[in-house]
Amino acid sequence: MTVLVKPKPIEGHKVRAFQMLIDGKWVDSAEGRTIERVAPGHGVVVSRYQAGTKADAEKAIAAARRAFDEGSWPRMTASQRSLVLLRAADIIAERADELAYLDAIESGKPISQAKGELGGAADIWRYAAALARDLHGESYNTLGDGTLGVVLREAIGVVSIITPWNFPFLIVSQKLPFALAAGCTTVVKPSELTSASTLLLGEILEAAGVPAGVVNIITGTGPEVGAPMTTHPDVDMVSFTGSTGVGRLTMANAAQTLKKVSLELGGKNPQIVFPDANLDEFIDAAVFGAYFNAGECCNAGSRLILHRDIADEVTRRIAELSAKVKVGDPLDPETQVGAIITPQHLEKIAGYVSAASRDGAAVAHGGTALDLGMGQFMAPTILSSVRPDMAVAREEVFGPVLSVLTFETTEEAIRIANAIDYGLSAGVWSRGFDTCLTIGRRVRAGTIWMNTFMDGAPELPFGGYRQSGLGRELGRHSVEDYTETKTLNMHMGPRTGWWMPR
Ligand code: NDP
Image 1 (tube, rainbow, N blue to C red):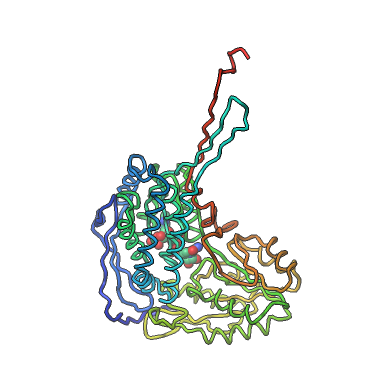
Image 2: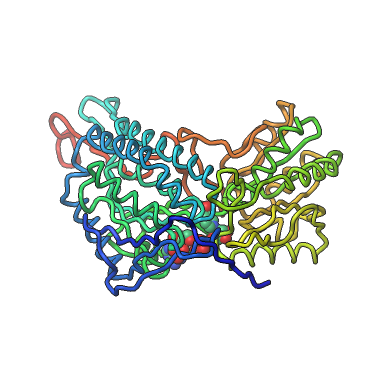
């Protein structure tokens, strides 16, 4: 299938040109090349970025290194850093509409959803500001009269932050404020498809009082500017969100200089549904879990594992509700599902559906691209009669495609849920306490939702088992992730060691 993208100009929009933020200055790339972003919902150019190079990445890393080794940020009090983060949160909230608009036109997500993400992001910055003041080590006065042990938590140093296109502002907000709270300095690279809101964040952080060189933001492709951020010896840690393939490459690159790595990768998240569940509530959550952000979401509930006794009824009702989901212009406040990020990605999604149909799956709803006379869109799609060995049941489609599998016993449901490479999240629906807890304890995933799906809060850690990633974001330990532990082992009184008389 070749996707034909139909252009539809956005009323009142002027193409916006951005520079990169390196060492407190807004600059062009070393080679002067630029990247144009075509809005997925409208098929027209909306932004122009600098196509950064390895030389730009190196300048940004050098600036972050200087700011860490010689600058004020790691040395100021936690309360001073906290105040800066709170000011940033306030400005994010003030400029939320502008940021949400940029995320909506560049990623194709619905504007109402983008505004919700901005509210969530401001809240995360506030949470990080609170944690900044609670970061502390430990002391041990239990080691005998002659010894006092103090365990320090020190900022790890320069952190490379690499983010994807699906939640541009939200994902950078799951990393950057915690790194800053710890006292780190950073180089940030947003996806080349959705860089605008992250660049605006640079302006916001300047206004909030982040000193020059502490946050450097560079744009360009992964291989050109992302790769040096994972290999450079002056970088101490890499925090990456994106595909499992690039995550693996990032870890291998970082291994050359033994950097710390934090990875948030893909998911193929099951929702397991028992006959005693509240099916009305589940059906709403199933449609939300599968089609939210057009399914371009690592947490998407893309696999339903339904008890055989309810599978036909539930599939029919989800298909009926899927037909009511409003797919359309990302800037229409009524839209629930927006555009697909690129024409190539839409082809990939449609390819999964065709392959599943050839392998024996049935299309209960959707299954094709939608021609809305603008951009590129995919119909919400539900596939039944999916077998666990099919690609659509095992691989991350990253589109609005829901696969229905069935089970008869709890053991079988757990086996199907765990029989993939991913382990990011899962849902279980039952009124039975034992059933929910059995699934909650036996399914190998970083988050298990019980009688709900895709809820979250900054207090709750997020991350995956197995090939869904390494480490956790958010939660009260999130600032500690950006630290090193140092032991101060102090001796008091006369030495009673090797050569000294005891
Ligand atoms: P990628 O993993 O390619 O991109 C994520 C980030 O990594 C982007 O900023 C990208 O830059 C950068 N990058 C790419 N190559 C390198 C490299 N060699 N070294 C360092 N950084 C690099 O994901 P895509 O955006 O291409 O999406 C592909 C698939 O990944 C999706 O279909 C989906 O399955 C999965 N995905 C998962 C996400 C999640 O939240 N877990 C998020 C996004 C995607 P750039 O794109 O600018 O070249």
